[in-house]
Length: 375
Image (cartoon, rainbow, N blue to C red; front, side):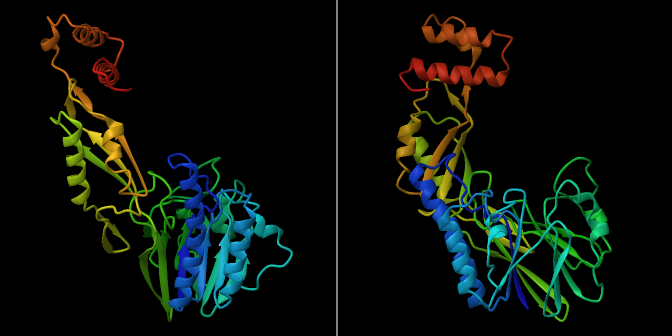
């Protein structure tokens, strides 16, 4: 039997932190379309079950478009069973209020609920302050069956007092769990539970912001005679990149542009997930890219960030630059400099109330203004 394990789709996310309103609206549509793409993949690859381990929605209020699209996809794929567990973002979502639930849609409560799929038993519990620490005692699994348990929260080897949605792995050991299907962490993560079982976060289907860079997708399980194989499947339509570029010694915008281009075309980050190595590779026109400029740059260097950014504006879906360079300042060079720039640099460097980082940022901004640039 083939089963997809996914989580943290966060449908109807605002996505307006970096993107324009038009881009954010388009991305919300793309995230919603991902659910249909996932279901189509399941149909084409004879997957019988899709597990969604929490935070399918970004909050409990969904748009009518999202509601109708989700129900339509589930009803159209009636040969696939959908198991949807609520997470901390989507408690009390619209599925709870459906007068008539699709026959192939299954949900859970804050008490263990089990379903049978062939030779596999799927059990889910929606965690809260009251039951998270007691989850191990609440489970009553048949050790002779292949058991999948769905939970949403932060894994921990020890209990954490007075914190919601903590999954105490220690309490779940030796409970007959073969696969602990988790949600909440937005990057792929896995580990051994005990001699019998494993736990796994599939991560989100697609990165939404610069805190979710790299490759995203879902986990495909194949269970035959109680033997399971697990494969991570890359799936996101767009990837999110954050690429550091050292521009030490570069003194003009044109050379910064050339340096960034070289860095992008040689970008070859590697990730190891689920026993497989993935090469992220260089971004393309579909992707969301942030360049972080680093290094030490002469304070008199010409560096026009809007101009540099404009060189890449049409090359990617979204592109931004963060300037985290430090000004290269030799204090003795300004000891006798009677210019306004010299007086400014000396004043900042002699201020003992400022940290080195604060001095660097103040000097960078001040020199930029004094040389005709923008802050």
